[in-house]
Length: 287
Length: 296
Image (cartoon, rainbow over all chains, first blue to last red; front, side, top):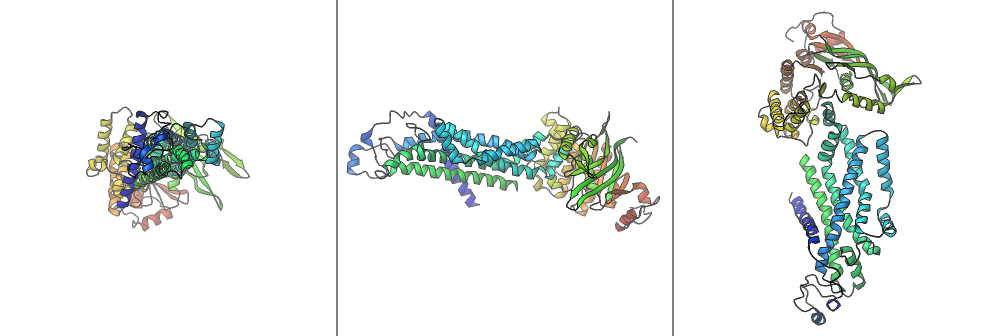
């Protein structure tokens, strides 16, 4: 009980902070251009670490930078914060896309018979055959890389996962006694499918999948930046391109890559855990 | 008495590993308006599959292969099996049915029948209620379907009234409960309320007391008796319990191995009038009812 609560609160707090920052980050004024070229302030350590005499000269106290500065003298803290903005709305977009289309395809594939079912399942399988990472890199090479494009493609590539869990659930439920009873009482099939099956019964798996997809977007953005500058483009900050930039100077200063890496790790872990905890709670409440 | 439902030469078959098996063989029966027809038979006699056929809810291949189910809706008589010949094709002596096309045909036709004309109460009451919706809301949904123009408050009041009429103590408390919070007997009462709130002309009760305690069974049977009497609805009551059927039914059909062995009035059976089929006699005796026992 306590363990479940602990997981809920810790992951929930991180997810909550992430979402809150995601909403307020666009309101905070940060001109990426202005922040460039303050080279005299490069590699300042975080406020909680004692600066070397050399660094003290270029980073006068108080530095005002809690997380230190990167190789261009830009504040890591503000870039971490604005980096959330880069993935938050695209993440929402991908999750909504995958949940709606995937849920609908899964429901149709599980509930209907005949040609419609065959077409739906075929479509799901075709998408499922695409290797996600390779396909994303391919898309980024063909088109101008943008995080929105990545999110849309990643959302579409997540459709099969969502559709399959929903389809299995719908297939199992369609022959349940109470669904037959609802039919016999004259409820409309569309209402039975959308409300009684999809909303009431598949809600928890959809929440779990949405949370996973969100984590996946954070991951894929970082990975694409790292692999070849496909993610969010400089000077727009994102966690991925912060790590990618800082890796060239990895030995000169640890802090510029450590914080975004930790942020990526913690955020993905929190979204995974949050999805699981919420879904398990919802399923537990049903019993 | 005018016929509400007339089943003629109904045959149902299923494909099994051992070949095609005929589970219901050319049965015919009628249910008059306001009449209670008892269907008596042991497990596997085909009584449940017959009700599924009447309801258009048969799952499996090929299902209904022959017959007519005539339902009088008041203004017209619907043949619920119309078009059956078109989906059957002969093939090496065994008829092949286009099940998909048939299912589509049935669900389109039954749209106007399910609920308003007939509805059902199944065995296993808890599984028949949506586990994630408050039972009161389920009754209310049923009321709202029967009266689409009613306001939410009126629907709620009527739903509460139904919970009262199925003799549930503290209807307000039951209204906000979930199925898993209620006992089996309470769930079955709610199920009866859900079915009757839809105001069907024919109620099909498929072994509604199976799996309930003896005392609860008696209460449910009495509940059916009083509600059917009050509303003057027609009912098909399917059971393997002779006493329940004799208590409720006006007329009784006895089924075994997919055929009807005997059709008789409950009155005749109770009083031992006329000739009994040997199997009926056996059923009566195994229930401890001996010939000419008017107290049965």
